[in-house]
Length: 470
Length: 93
Image 1 (cartoon, each protein chain N blue to C red):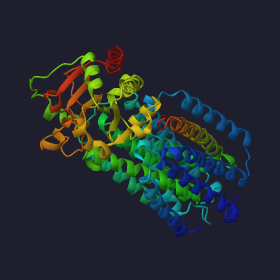
Image 2 (image 1 turned 90 degrees about the horizontal axis):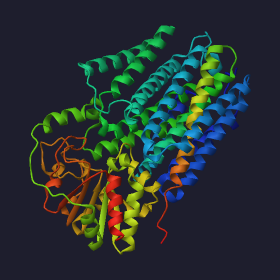
Image 3 (image 1 turned 45 degrees about the horizontal axis):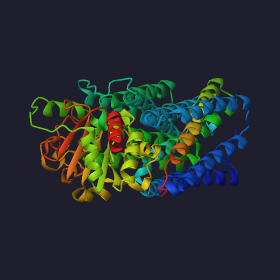
Image 4 (image 1 turned 180 degrees about the horizontal axis):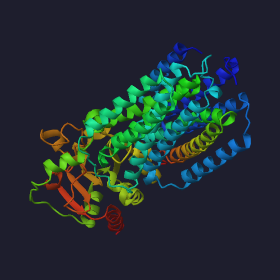
């Protein structure tokens, strides 16, 4: 197989592929250019695959095409059928596949280094390649097992509540140190047992890292695993000296890291504290027992319909509860009726609303809400003071004023919507019993201008639409 | 390519990634994750090399499985991104 440098056109082709991937992300700066960006991504992938196939002696083309056909078919059908509300778990599942693919490629490179041109004159694998492979398989394995847990939690197949192991910090740090130590030792001794031990430990730590992390922290976890899948690809790119893989790995790695940062900032939490885990549990312990009995007002669908018809402006604040109730379509219908009656309707999206970055935006887009009616936190927050009605559907922590005032609150410092400044607040909630994921009581429930609409979000919106059309 | 050239590409690409991703509108963060997912499956290049090569049957089969997994991601990732992006519409009126 080829040990010499590949011809210039091959390097150029991989470079073009990498540039196309950059353009794919660049397109996402606006919905108008995003679809063209996606096509650049597909073209980049096609270039990379075809270049690889034509520059290697392919002994097994039918098998390869078969594998592409089977995998591609599964992927395509899944992508067509998946409900938009299930997007977080789909993305987690996809991350796990990238992780597993990285593990398999690294393992194949270890078993057949000659095919990858990474063995030295003495038949041993180059020490630098060993580090790259070790990192590649470790990050890949962490991505795989971590994403599987994230998938199970997001799909509701495993409790979303944090699972705490005793001494988990010691176990995690010890495992991590062992992995790094073994990767170091791997450079002087390439015995198989070292390689496979690294792999096994990495699978274990991916699992251990994610099980203590609770539901509300999932956006950070999904972003972080996205980042890892990129770093795994980059590490394998180093092994293969492949520009397309390195550029992509760096892009995806930074993308996931930036998203994690945005999510952490939107919750006013440090990355370390999220990874250390246990948000939900600690908060429940502090906020749980002292449940206050304060007076609150219950509203009806008719009240909400009447008040909103009278209003000049309504701001809708959706949260994860809207996704669970699948209420986005009926919500848009409600907004349509209001708009026809001359009411200005806007949507306000918090960065951590939902279970992954941008989750609410996708659901609203699915319900055909025009994207220029949907606003980010910092763009719309000043408008609540001039707004007649704030309509909160399935959100809770992101509108909790305790984040601004109560230093003892677990969500203190988190940027929240100033819904308390709106003239009237409607708050759709299933019951008064449950509190948000952070387990904190919310002063908005008890304000004079608040009416609680206690019902399933979808049912309540249906009733409001009926009342509006009277 | 020597290690330093590769490292240079990597570091530059990290900077490009940093600036490009900050320019992505928050409304498209979910499609961003889906598409980064799809493109990180460029790891299929390594899987193809492993499955194309003779020498080690085990490595070949590992490669073929990796090709299949990466293909799920490539087709699934781009298709689901396209599906999501097609839903983002401006106001008609």
